[in-house]
Structure formats: C-alpha cells, structure tokens
Amino acid sequence: MTVKNIPSLRATEGSVAIHSTLVLRLAFSCSTRGKCAYVLSALRTPLAHANATARACNQERGLACRALDSTQGKPCSVALLGLAFTMDEILLSLTIIGVVAAITLPSLTGNINERTWQTQGKALFSRMSQAIALMPSLNGYGTLTAGTTSTSAIDTAAETFVTNGLAKVLKINNICDNEHLQDCGIPDSYVAQGGSKRDFPTTLSELNSKIVGSNGLAIDVKAAAFETANGESIAVFYNPQCRAYTGATNYYAQQYFCVNFVYDLNGTKGPNTVGKDIGYMTAFNPSDSTISSPVFGKILAGVSYTNSKAVAACRKLGNEYRLPTRDEMASLFYNMNFVLGDSTGFSYQYQIDKQVGNNTFWRFGGDGKIWQYVGGNVGALCVKTR
Image (cartoon, rainbow, N blue to C red; front, side, top):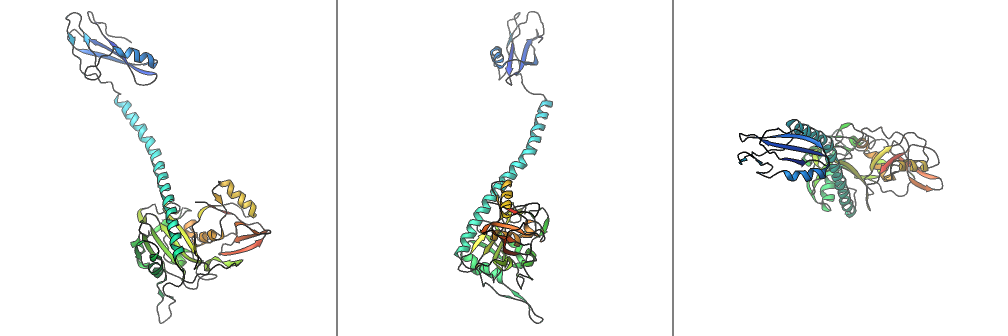
C-alpha cells in the first residue's frame, strides 16, 4: 500500500478487522497546510495480525487519527473518519436480504399458521366430543315435513338441534338460521382439499347429493350455523332420524350419521381452505354418540389391494398414514365435496380398517354402501392420524 510521501511529515497507519480474513487497512497523512487525508484498501490478512496493528489507531471522536507536524509541532486536527461501506455495497446487501426474506418469510408464516390451525382443530374436536357425549340423544329435534300442493315445507330441524340441544352443553355465542349462515362467519365459498373452489353448501343434498334420495334420506334438510365462544364458525347438517349401528354387516352410511359439522376456525378471514382453517367432523349414533374427524391423506393408484397390501401401502407414505375406520370412511363420504371437490371421487370400492374375521374384511362402495366381504382386491384410501 502506498502512502503520500510528504517531506517533514510523519503519518500513522492502522488496520481494522471486519471479517476473520478480510481487513480494511487505513493510511493517514497530513499536509503542511493542516489538512488530513487517508487511503483505504482491503487486504487479505490474518485476524491476529489485524488486531495487533490496529493499536496504531488513536480514538478521537470515535474512529480518528492524530498526525503530528514534525516541523511546526502542531497537531493536525482531523475530522471524524467514517469507516463505511459504499452505497453500491449497501444496496447489494439490502437486495440480498430482501430476496432471502421474500423466499423464507411466507414459508415460515405458513408453517406457523398451519400449526396454529392444527392445534385449534384438535381443541375444537375435544370440546365437541365432550359436548356431544353430554347430550342424552341426538334425534328428534325440530320439525321436518315435506311440502304439498297446499302446504309449505317446514324445516326447523338443524336450528332447533343447536338451540334446544347443543347450546345446553356447549358455550355458543350466536345461532343463525339457514337464511343467515354468513352472519355466523360461514364463508360463501371454500377451496376443497383437492384444489377446486366451490360454493358452501346450505342443505344436505348440497353437502353430498347421494345423502338424499335412493339409499339415503327421504327429505332434504337445511343447514344452520353457530359461533362458539372461542370464535369458531360451525355449519350444522342434521339428520333428525339417524339410526344406531347395531352390528349390521351390510348397510348404507347415509342413514347412520346424526350430525355433520363443517367448521371454519377463523370465519370468513381466509384462506377458507379444507385442511387448513376448514375441517369437518361427524357424530354417529343417537345415544352414546361418538364423533369422527378424519384427515384425508391419499387415494392410492390401482384397485388391486388386499387388506394387508393396503395397510402396507399406507404405511409407506409415513408412520401417520393408515386405513380409515368405518366411521371415518363414512365421514369422508358425507364430505366428499370438501375432500375432493366433487361427489364422484369415491367411485371405487376401498379397503376399510383391519380384518374382522377369518379372511373377512370391511369394504366401502362409492354409493355409500359398507359391507363385509371375503377376500378380493379393491382400491386403497389412506387417512392421517391427527
């Protein structure tokens, strides 16, 4: 490094470490007219050497130098020397920081939101399970009559179930009838787990067209909604005449659910997406009721699975994957439009849970039929353990 060679002038030099190997080296000089100048250069030098030579720098107003005019014996007053990066270096650093932040922050925020939703969903499932267990019966609430040529249909079933039944065992802030679901935070539309955007259902037939009609309920039922004390918005799809399971080995799932709840953990705020802030749970049996809230995983390719092969194929996806129980498969069936985005997705027959006897297994059909069978290869669907 070169320092200005001025007669009768003594200059001091110093080094300041900014990295373990990169050092900024300063050379100071003073003119005979009392003006000071410095030269800055970057050297690759060990940090230990930099620390040793840095002692040559004097501190005056922060980082400064004092040079002595050997001729006049007067100090050369030096303004504060700023050790700084250039504007180009600062802009480049800010650009890099911005790019890294743009890449990482959405992912970090998304992970935090998903963990929050998972925690909220588990807590809501626990509260709903406790509330349903406290109800003496889930059947018979409200009035449900079909309209005729001379009379109008009467449907107060779901709203009455919430008002006269659920509200007595669960803290509820607001109850909304079928005409005012949005007043309870129910969104107008949602994004299914399969990715398609759909209008939010307001009746059982809109929830799944296969619930009403052949093999299903004789009368469609309007949905109601409520808001919990914790801020969740829940739509209620009610079957006032649900059946208790008594050991049948061949039946249709449509007649065996009592209440299907579709919840939104943060109301209309968004993202209104199934698997994130939107989920579902189904209550079975009018007395001694239980709730199932399956987490859909994946439909495996092909239809050549025995029960043992289906179990093994789900485990290959991860330890949290498994075959669904009968109630879980039924709940997925009711909520087809929320899971896959359409009501034709479960068109195959699927293995259910574990073996129930000597070479005897449960099977689910796309029309809602659940039955026991002996042997045979069908499709496989996996759910995730919460």
